[in-house]
Image 1 (tube, rainbow, N blue to C red):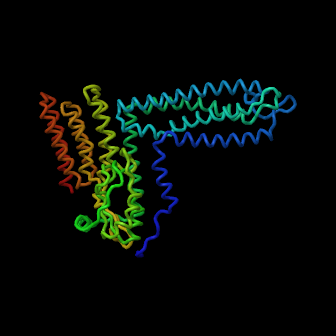
Image 2 (cartoon, one colour; image 1 turned 120 degrees about the vertical axis):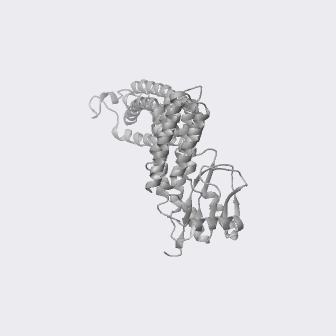
Image 3 (cartoon, rainbow, N blue to C red; image 1 turned 45 degrees about the vertical axis):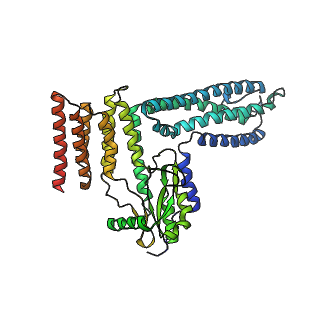
Length: 458
């Protein structure tokens, strides 16, 4: 491999990468973009109005009659009615959206609001109604009454009617979408699918770089950075949301440096406190600006590179369901099942060192990896604590530990065994009686046996 690696990402692709990260959870970007497009559509239809002309008794157009306004007065009445109806329906869509956010926040957790904001059906529906209101308003302003059929903008009128009618079709789809997505089973399943996409994205992002398998070498590099590396302070307080590792690898290759991140994605940093360490120390000043641009820090955690956050979203639904105010055991059990599916996939990944190699096969960047042990605790600890006095939740936790142990890598089995022991200890501390206690001990025995069988087999 050559000592100098070509740029992995152009400046245009960097801008696009950041744009896709920022646009997703916004409710205004798509509607405003659609509104801008409909203004362009109005300009085109007005040009066509001059070409097509106005239908008359001796000059018919090959369009349905309901798309044609014979007089300016007819166009004025229809467009005014559409404008009023669309404005009222747009207010309904906004109020329904706000109500959905309120229900999601109170019943499922405020961190799930971002997921509803990213729903393309919601964004497109808002955009359609806003676009239709704008188009109908502009077309209505183009109608010239008192001069007969010549005052009717035929093409603009037809486009306004078609767009207005499509909005009401979209409204039906939107209401159905809200009714489906607000249900807890669908929310949990979608969060886990989002976790799968997050893992896929993480794998895709690492396809262009080489991961170091030298654990001892990476640890030695970290210790050297702690001893003699220069600190780069965090430029803001908040959660690390995204780390652009490709840009960092380019920068470190260019300056023959090494960056050791102090925090992984999802962790909280305080402005002015250490964000990363740079080797050699004299290179810190040259790459500090690029490091700041490569690390996004925001007020909330996001799913893009943070698999643990998706785990916590499911956990939050579970502990809310298990709270005394809700007492929904079945939702809690369902969350445990989905968490088991997520852990099974994550447990099939090898233990990473966190080292990313640059040009020449040298480790240029260290990103603290998310260990499977931490993932298991993130998935089960809060549910174990909230459901310690609920035998059904305890039994389901032990069953999921047993089924998960079948497919995970052997080095992850110790974490599952420790979790099974904690679940048993927490449950017995609440004093289950009779058959409940016997069932819990039996499920723990089965889980431990399954883990031991895997350990012996490997």
